[in-house]
Image 1 (cartoon, rainbow, N blue to C red):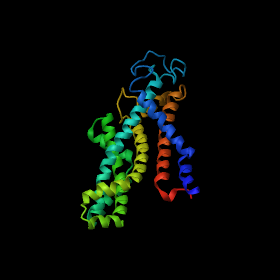
Image 2: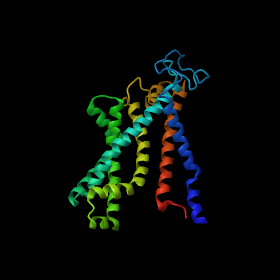
Image 3: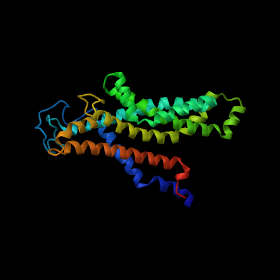
Image 4: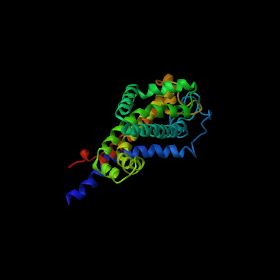
Length: 279
């Protein structure tokens, strides 16, 4: 009886449900921003640095723009950047990681060394170098830069997971039966590494969101009129003492999303990693 009840108890961990709830709120706000915002982003009819009120739920900035509208659009940008960077970084990392696991000893060691060297550099630094190389700051450039910056981490994890799968007896049996390497990757390697890789990609999503906010704060992210949370923090730094809500609210939104994603990743790790399950 206890054996069947244990998995259900683990899945109902309230901390994990908190993660789902936090991420769900940000996702819902980002989706709503596609069809509705309280004010147009360019509307500067409000008073300068107004405090939160019934008319402006989060107050206004120094130009009279509604901050809640900017927070909603910032949620959309954070989700788009996070998903785009994970898609690009995941694609590059999975392909190179699988190739490294299947490569010869020399090629495998060389690719592993490249992964380790690139991982030694912060993702934000790599993203800044990519943006500088393209000589333009745009949302697409930020997504591409962050995707490239995340790819070595994903590649290293994929290489380790793939080599672990390839050492199993059923892979040897599949090869003896005449199954080609392409089929082995599709039917055996990818399905077995997907759960653990998903945990890593969830963590990379949070890293991408933080890095995008940092790029926008430095003026290297999405240019105006995009209202990313990082740009909101940069614009509010001059009025942090007279109108603190302009800096507190985007910082809080960024905190909520990153914490929620990390709790979600922890939930996935507990579900798929048997060594972490409670006995």
